[in-house]
Image (cartoon, rainbow, N blue to C red):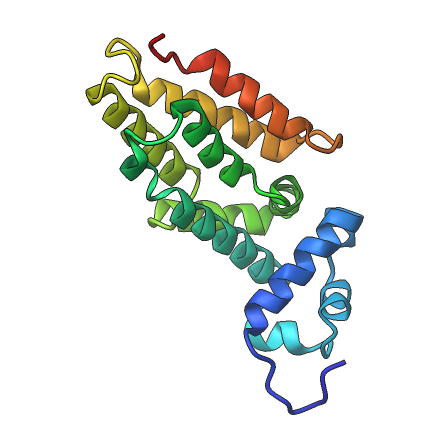
Length: 196
């Protein structure tokens, strides 16, 4: 355990990473202050030194992870004309799913106050699923202009279908390793037309 009074670098990320491990191992029922701080190997009160309560902590975890995802997919429209269209889109979709996406989403949904805080933050402009959907739509539109996606394809609806399905997988993901990845690849292949 970290010695008392010694500063811990990047406390938020250390606690967030510990929470993801707890969620992956024990599910949302196992997510407690004690479980997180023990997993992070730090003092029990540390979480409350940085967050108002456990709901605030979980909400900030969800928002932080969506901000990371949004940053990862923000450059997707700039990839137009490079690489395989479906692979580029699949990569963005898989970023939205994330390695611990279903567990983090389940934690948010299991706590009413967390879900409400996250919803308000998204309404206030914090990056969420809408940021990924927008990046995908802009990417598909750019590929249409280059002739790599048919002009008659509805880019906005394709982006909505992909993000909506991935959001569903985040909430109800498969427990079989790699199954969500396979489903996303099949989805993108089925939905996104590319000229022969």
